[in-house]
Length: 129
Image (cartoon, rainbow, N blue to C red):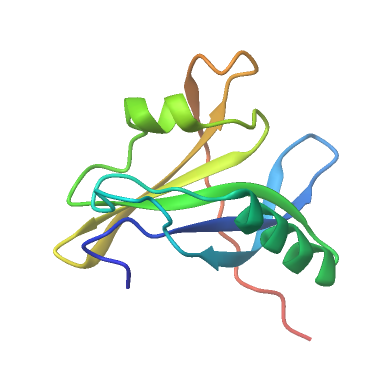
């Protein structure tokens, strides 16, 4: 519902034994970019602290970040690469066209922060008691 601006937030979950990020919850954050929110997003140190606290309350960790690309493909931009800071995080991008989500992709940042590599997305129905 951030459209036409970029929406953003955090992926909460666990890291499996094989190093895969398993996302089980989202923590929404405000887009704090000072201008051009239609093409940029910004998360502050306070946002990261709030997300970490929310994750800990649920027995989880912050395992990544998500944001939307209004009327653009769900691929990392050069700005996304320049501003990504955490190798090992999952970076999810959702393309939104005319207010409707259309595509979702996941990426991981190379250890030297030089590139993103596409991650496979495996969606499971929530477990019920």
